[in-house]
Length: 243
Image (tube, rainbow, N blue to C red; front, side, top):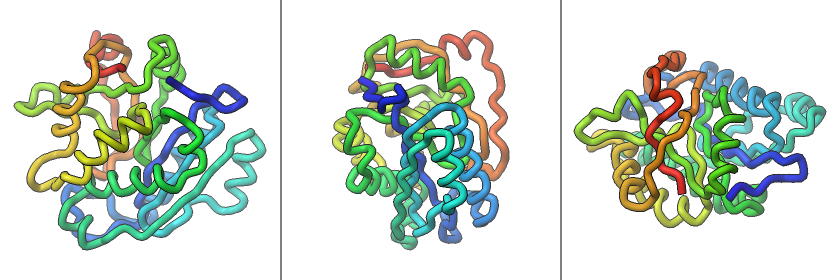
């Protein structure tokens, strides 16, 4: 169930690592400037789109937003909570992006005032945003859902299909007790965490069909702009898990 602030807006967690260590498996966008600018752009998008509570957590001991950024966001009614910590670079190089993402989410759950005030929240990987968020939000509200995850359509026909972990809606309880153990067991060179999360969701959350999130921005995996292709009917009737 979505808990909103006085403006009617849910809380979004943006995960970030704008200065990652070199040599992280399957990470092609590793330069500071590209990651910094693309992540900051996504935060501005979320704010201008009407989101009023944003938690930004960076794992490389950086705050993305300076005082003038905060002033501009404040002027349009956006509350920002910035947190940062220093990730274990050696473990991230060894275990990869999935493990690193889990560490960021865990830090956010333990340290964010905003997240501690809500039962469920959206998680969005830095550098991207959802351009049909209003539709996604309405679907979640209409289902009175605490959880919403979508399949990665392009990876749906793999022997081990993937969940799309760039953007999802989760309860704190499910995240802490179910998702985080999957992230912490992940080693990218052994197998993608997205496939393991897909298996978890198949076992624990009812499968459904809904309009899929249209994500735009930049991929750290490819180092290129995310170009969301049309999947025809699957754009409107995408396999997902809602509970």
